[in-house]
Image 1 (cartoon, helix red, strand yellow):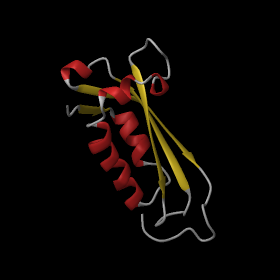
Image 2: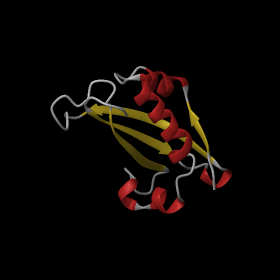
Image 3: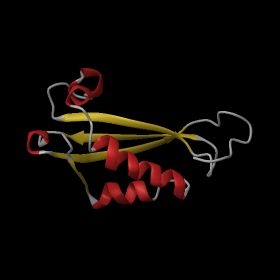
Length: 111
């Protein structure tokens, strides 16, 4: 099943203002549009992906290397209210970003 993903203005603004290259930001948008919109029920319902068991929230993470930007690995974490999943709707209620380490000296190339 493909879901309609609701991303409110606050979370969209947060993601748009991350310290990432334009290429990396496009990857984040693609990830939301494809991976989150097509997430499997088994993944969403796996207890390791539910930050609060018994609550209607699942967690999904993207780790990407911003080779055209700062050369660092970045983790994007989304908390998703999936109480509307049966109606085909997932709502991003929280977005978070952490910058990791450079995997090698220089760390530049393509995303």
